[in-house]
Length: 113
Length: 112
Image (cartoon, rainbow over all chains, first blue to last red):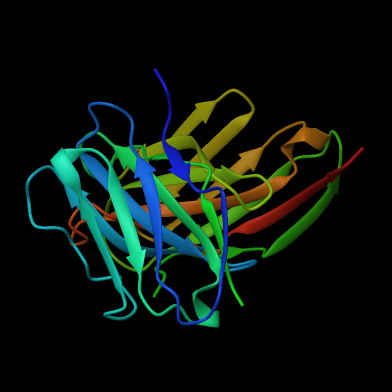
């Protein structure tokens, strides 16, 4: 079946604007993760959803970041009042049982001017 | 903060040589995984080794795990130019609630 998809591929926005990033996980995967990767760095965990449980939001860097997952499938990561330091590649991944192999989407490259 | 630390940060070798990358971590784990990333986009899962395993092979990849030293290594044998990429280790820690913690990665360059 299809892999994890993310949209948009690239997003350029102005400082102070809100952005929404979308992730479509692999069908049937109960766990969904968001990560952020700054240039030349490793992945920084942001948030993850597992089934109907409350999401683990421990990685969100500030209250400007939020995410939701509707119907246990598609997820949207929202960044309000974007700052230049938010510029990064935002990666989404999904998996079956948590902690097992994660399947990554191609990422959204966000540039805040 | 990232749990995994990898070394070297960058590695440059000739085609045909072997490449070894190391990963250290801090807490008890359920498993450790290695991922590959091309051009700063999506990651591809390479191999998973569980805490009760010491060595695992997949094609030209060999992974070892030493839980007493909290370290793992990834060996790529007979490297090819197409192996050029960034390689990350990720740990599924016993107290991490299922999320993976990634290292900073090793940037491998294989010259033809």
